[in-house]
Length: 176
Image 1: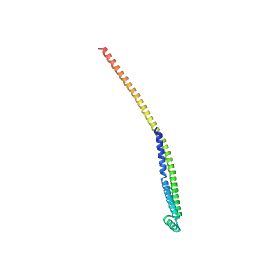
Image 2: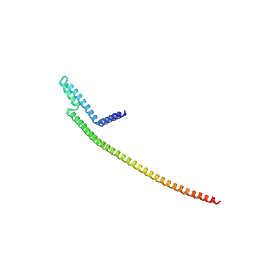
Image 3: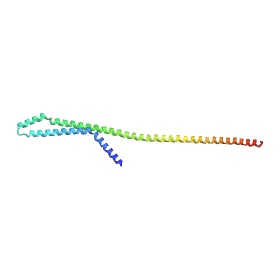
Image 4: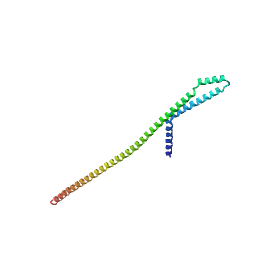
């Protein structure tokens, strides 16, 4: 049940990372759009001033416009500079994205290889431990067999001695 939630959370986190990677581009575009809107509103106000009642007002409005606002070539140059800056930022971000993607792929491969190595080492450790335990078991069985043989020999010798003592007592009691 929680599996789909994890996938959904991971997808949201990936989307957030993608969107945050382009914040500089978004900010540059927003600044460009704001400038364009200011220029357009300044141009509309200048056009209203130019359509005034007389030549005197027209000349004053035109003079006021050129002194108050930047000229069209200056505005175009500023917009082009902003556009080139935005494109430069975009290309830098794209290069960084490619670099980070490559690094991520390398890290994923390394993680997979490390996982395999860990599994192999754990398997080898398990096999070594198993061999050690088998060796200890064999040594314990050999010791047990040796001790049983020694015990049986001791019992046999003791029984033989007791038998000789009993015979000696029997022989000694015949003459008494």
